[in-house]
Length: 507
Image (cartoon, rainbow, N blue to C red):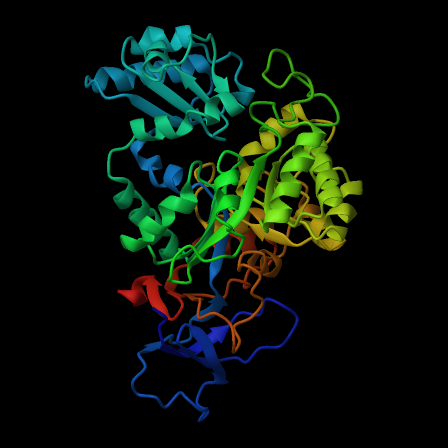
């Protein structure tokens, strides 16, 4: 049900060069913005005493924030997994796990997350994990979610054949939902409710969910059970594409009666990841060695298969979201998009050929990027792509070429935190080192504009999806200070369709 609300004495944040009033009142009626007027003026509609009011008290006003790439259930269940992100080698991780297993003598499976083996001096081997976990099923998911290291007990439990090392890409994705269930310490409903509320408290009004499985069937049940605070766009993968097309669903179609739950894009994973060295590249990896993707990474489809998938989705009315991290994968995705006439996004676009920037712009392909990844991948890229790091995370170049940017997190790979994503895009460093290729950084205004789901201003006719923050997000001077301001902002209120859904002013 659409809501109505008056917000008084708010300061709009300019996301474009157009001037904005200093202090405004906003009227939301039936879920949409009915009027925006300078505070203190006798504008029509604001005298309606039947509409609830919020005094912004000079807080800064923004359109609601979107996360363009989330795996919601994986993110929601992250806190029930062991945090192994600090492990510096396979031997170090095994030593840490031995301590954990000794302190917890239960028989529940051990499920961990967060290790990044790309810069390890040793390989993750099943035998080494067996030595410290014995018969207790153990599954350790890499920080990029593209690999899982099992012990023999877990392989047997899951009905998998013996292997010597970690499972990557399709072999891992096929069983990922089963492993997620192993780590469950709370119900799916409770985990999702907590994750959605946390997102709302950070100013998020909507997200694109790329969870594996039949989310387009499951999400209506979640909404009916009360998980309906945010706007959700639900993707599908190739295994569900025939059923989605048979149901006649197109991108943007409602999946329930709320108006907040809609069909999203068709997701295609066209290559792998940087940390597993399976991202498909034009030049070989500097240290390719004995890795799943060989010397150049891997493509998951032939050109003909990729083109056919895009043609089917276009004919069926589905936009596409093509996962492509390596520059060869991005180029191949663009060729298939050009040939098929498909619309949509390239997800990640982490490494690009400069000649492909204009191709993306001409094809109106959205670059759906996750800036926080560069904080984690900087050192890995310097090791495996030392001759091409100037072409990594080319955010400024994309904008200059006319490419539309959409920011996201890829949670659980990075936290579902739009302020972290914006800060990473603005100051490309997570520590005291200088920004990594500072010429590719965004301004705070550009980062904000890429985080609002395409909404450029709070204006009449728009959705009643708004955020109030405690200070001016554009107040920083210099990239480091601008990033600090963004990271330290406090959200006072999040509004979706005129309803108070997040922040202390909503309680």
